[in-house]
Length: 489
Image (cartoon, rainbow, N blue to C red; front, top):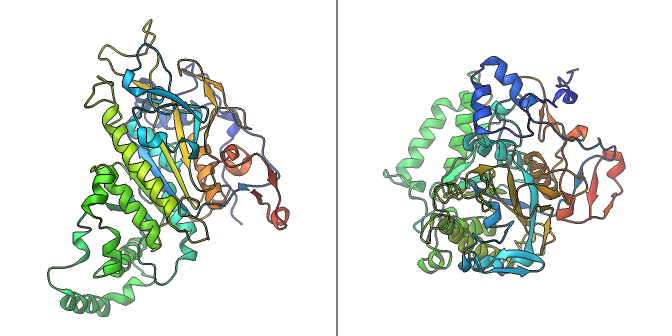
């Protein structure tokens, strides 16, 4: 019997660097210590752990799909979804309280019409302030510098693998698709079948779904390849890499010369205009098409950069305005279209699709005696406080969960049952819970033989889904106690 190899979580609290989060300078100072640094980095992040729950994982299971919008570059929380109004606020932000939520209606006028569908987590705190490190952390729900972090798959790869058994024979697309470039974490130690299929959305679709030799010659050559080495592809003695490559071949072959697949990645000029004529807007159209087609894709990552506003954050044709306009038109129209489209369970696609939007961290709100927090270049620098936006998939909208201080510097009230700041691991647990995936599960096929937790230590109560996104009432299903699973209703 394999024994679980666990780190003692009681030893995580450390006063080494006098703070609760890891900044850029501390990160590189620790990394420079070599092997010692690899042990010190996990120790820098003190946690207040939830009590281990005997009731098992809390699953809502109302979502069938997930769209994760990665706002790369880190948007300013106090200028967007945790708006703080002061002398620094541009008049064209037009702050307005909608459903009790203060929102920059002038900055994102189309999304303002969907505030009643939003649940905004305002008590989220980032563990680090290094773009590359934290962008990975948000996608794998663990410290990338840890041993397991280095082999960890994207949350989307986990979702694709968990739902693989539900795939139907006629579904030809990968379970995980990434759109609009960006830094998307791959499938880690998982089989390459669960690697994100990276696509740049274009009105003309995917040009590489055909081959210049023609379909007849392509099919003939493909069959020759199978005749030559098919036996080496199945249970190959040459190792996992051959199996991975065969997975690529099989998925790619199913998509070639397939008019139904080709149509999913195409859209009209009018649609492109309505969604904003941007890379992000185009990706939102394709995301809608993917869910509508039901061709096997269950997790879609949309990447939107441009938020790293160290200089001139309020520049009219740049700064926060440029990415905010793309997000506003793309996401607002995506939500409207999903509401209008029937889902697979009798409701709408919006009802069964969880949408999550967040960056890697937030931006400064204090700089010395400068109350607005703008730096010498009229921008905002990296900061720990941030937000996460949830919509659809059973989310109760029209509210903010948690509050921050009057300037957005720190969490004033966490706003959820665990009574602490929300971490990336809690976000991941919330996504899995909404999809009905047991976030406390441990897989025992990792190359280290240590056991890979979908969310680290969640089975010991370390991390928890934000159930307040969905409801505060919890009851057990008849099979809950026997299986150790409770469903939130």
